[in-house]
Amino acid sequence: MHPDNTQFVSGGSDSLIGFWDFEDLICTGTMASNDYGVRCLDFTPCGTMLSALSWDESKKRSVLELYSTETRKKLINTTYFDSGVNKKKMAWHPGLQVANSQSKKQN
Image (cartoon, rainbow, N blue to C red; front, side, top):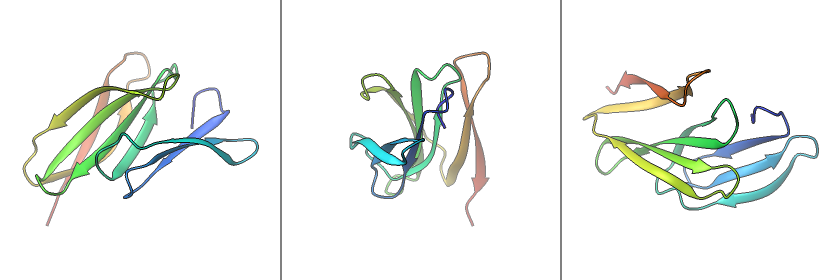
């Protein structure tokens, strides 16, 4: 959910990120620039950026991508090379522009 409570985002294995109007529950647009299936999405506390946490199955690594919510363009693509670790959750620090994620060891 966006911090101003007017929109929310969705994502899944098709790698699309959808933007939705909260009041009318209609899709206002999608982004297809994400390269992997989306595991987790989160807006920055100020709402200017959106982070997408994904999993690259072929290389067994987690990928964190940052997007501008205004332009809906990718800003940064950071890959975490965690062999065998599939990150499923992430969150922004409430006062800093820093993201953190949790890991769960695959069996």
